[in-house]
Length: 183
Image 1 (spheres, rainbow, N blue to C red):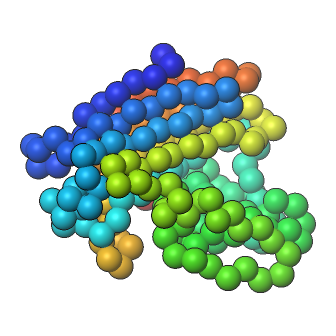
Image 2: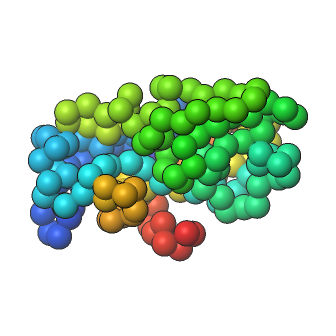
Image 3: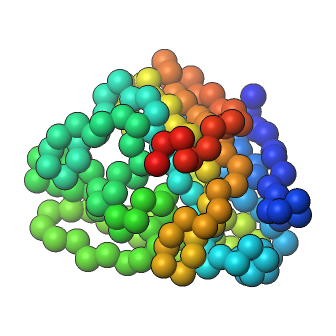
């Protein structure tokens, strides 16, 4: 399957659609609604975002202490990854896919402003994209659309999808698990 669409509901009301497509090395997805702000008001939330869990990785990344991350893990890993000794990829540490708050980095590191929520949100859509950067080429993720309150706490979990890369082949499918099975 190259693309699929699933309807997103909140308390029996359709609030939008989730469209997921595979790319050469990963996946892109989009939650589409008529008006993001009106949708947030309908569900009593402050933000929409994604939660992604890596459930399989034959070559897990290193945490900031240069130790392999234990599987399953939240991706991006809270606080960041060690890309190589003494060079870090930072994030806001909240555990959601797009960074909600700005962060200050210390020492040698990298922070990608394109990974912020505001840079992946329009008036009618929340975007998602990811690629496997693993040399293992045997990696699997499960990703869910989520709503958060003003304090960045998980308020609601919506539809999910899973994607994997094995032997340079990308597969996508609907995720039947819930994020609560992992966190």
